[in-house]
Length: 160
Image (spheres, rainbow, N blue to C red):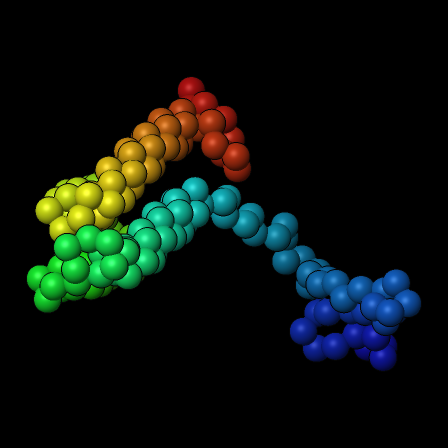
């Protein structure tokens, strides 16, 4: 063993500052390295849905001063409605790994649409985010279709 080797099979081709790098040298006779799994499209999709829910919760909370100043006032019912909606959206953001989450996300959009009763601007938020969720459901169906036919990056191609 030389000074540039260590017990874990890592060798150094010189210090990184001098253009060298650490590299893993497999043990002799160990065979080819195992293949790394392909990219997971659903991991990024869960991130998009969770991020959309957090963004929607922020927009709902930003409606608090608007309803208080311009609307019919921030009554206890209106305050409870807006804070409760924001809390539901934040909780749902943490549940995006569940198979049913996308459908609950879409169904929850009925709650902000009902916000027309509190203030028309809140109902508009509901209509706007319903359109965003409809687009997300469409993108989900496209990812499912492409995954089924093997057309996603990291897949080998269409099945025979």
